[in-house]
Image (tube, rainbow, N blue to C red; front, side, top):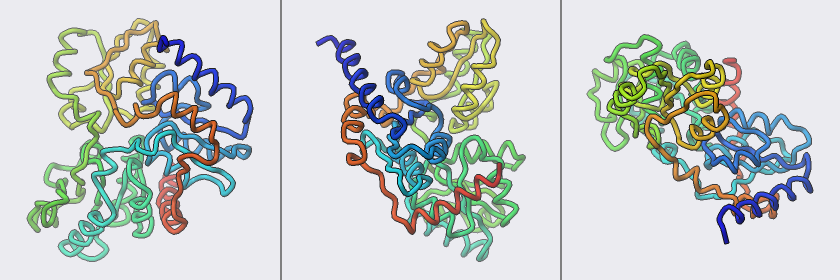
Amino acid sequence: MDNRLHDEELIEKIRVKKRELGSQLLILTHHYQKKEIVSLGDFAGDSFELSRKAAADRECRYIVFCGVHFMAESAAILAKPHQVVQIPDELAGCWMAEMADTQTVKSAFEQLESIAGKGSATPLVYMNSDAELKSFCGDRGGVVCTSSNAAKAVEWAFAQREKVLFFPDRHLGHNTGYDLGLKDDEMVVWAADKPLGGNDPEALRRARLVLWDGYCLVHTRFTRDHIEKRRAEFPEAKIIVHPECPREVVALADACGSTSRIEKYVREAPAGSTIVIGTEINMIERLASQYPDKKIIELHRSLCPNMAKISLEKLLQTVENVGEMNVVRVDEEIKAGARVALDRMLALG
């Protein structure tokens, strides 16, 4: 069978189920999903924005999150008691999120306090993490951040205590610290497999921002050479990249921002603009299709294979087994701690 015809049949079957379930079903699609998945969603956006929209919907009973697992967990944390959250593929994980676990973060936090003093550090966890780490932060006076509000969250954390342990993405933390005016010796990287994260005690006492050595494989594929190549090819272009990119890439770009900011940047650019984007390829290709009056080019082709695990076949199977298949559950105690950290973030505005 022709793949296109096969996809059209799957899409129609999903639409039939959507009509049957009506307002009881919400399909959430992350910016990095394939365009045919996004076309079936009720909302497209970044992970936390989508979770909030679903939780605010009083009629919705079933939330199907087309993204990676930590995103569906966030939806489950915020969901109302009558709402069930599902993910089309339970194996759609996130490499960065898996680079930090509660035991190693707890050990790092205790080691840091043993050097700098009890109560000297605030834990700050990026949204791209599992529920247990969010709960860890909630229970220890910490906060969650997104790539949109990382600067506000770091400023809040510094107002609580002198140091911040930022995890799991070192690059978002580094770029945020740089934007806030921190000096190089005020930021250190913590390697989880080494005592004191590979740092000497004096460096840790001097540091204000301690960065977990985690990273996004999609955004660390971009390099200085990619920027220079695109500058030579398209001298008129503006380049915007995601803050999960390494510092040298962000420094050479014209702008930097979250997926939502990238979408806004493209939308508000004048017709005829040339825009080079450093983020996941599915989002770039969708923006190019959505804004044909502008030339939208990838900085370098970078695909998230975990996002790609969400297929039309798996989405159809999920809505045909609504409320039953691949249900995402979060332990109530973990959910309570995570909600505290998320509520602190929401209070930042």
